[in-house]
Image (tube, rainbow, N blue to C red):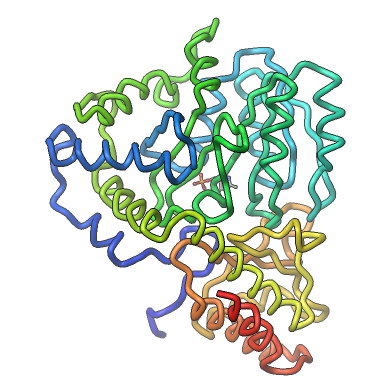
Length: 388
Ligand code: PMP
């Protein structure tokens, strides 16, 4: 059995070799001038990735769930009303975390594959004075993208802080923190940021920082308290070391290289590439007669796709795709978990990766006796990729 395979799950993704090589340095002291420079420069450049001119970046050792935990524990005070725009498994998680820190959580849920309408969200915001409006930019369980620009403006117009889980979106889907009035955006390293798992990354607007500074009650947690990390982030950006917990030095070297590559590509070019590659993949699934979980193209993410198995095919498809050299993921949304599979196409993904994945899916479908015109998916993908 060959060790070669293409990792096309919705994170961790295939990483650029230069990013992996950047990690393989002899670990310097976390207070050495060379590391202070690397970390400080990376923090500043993250603003360009989030398109935030005056946000406060945080980079802490942990996964995306820690970033959610940090936002919730640091900003929510017991009794705060929170409205969650729920589009799946990871919205459920965010609602649970907010509840854990004492928020009164209300949720607007949509059917699987759908997004609550902005009118509904606005009507809900008018009923109660919510402190936070929470949304998942791309819910990795459904491949559904929320229009977080509208979420940001609705929150701002109704006196709430907007909090966006950008774990499966940031640095892939178009996102403009300033322009869209998003107060908190958080992510994890292993997705479109293109760095191995282990970094929780957040960007807080000045309004969110005011809420953090103006808290009335003590933060219930220690490691996850953003106030404990703020002096560290401020110091490194000012090119001074400061200690709270030892930073994951080698991962930050990797982040430094990945952010350099992201900015060299340019955010607009990156958003466009993700859009074209995802549309090509989604068109390929259509060409094979497969249905996507999002109910309409406008709701489909640009970083991943969730695809229903066709009639007569089940999760055996995953093993067959793997046998053709590509790893994709099974379903996780509790209502449809055994009826669909998920494919990540973000970060360093290339047109060749899209074609390889579509080709592997075709091979797997053929092996399982599904009837279709071989090459129909590849042809649709090729047409889409022609727009690059
Ligand atoms: N939110 C979303 C949208 C995610 O996709 C994930 C991870 N798949 C998380 C949160 C949690 O991130 P992690 O697994 O890094 O804790």
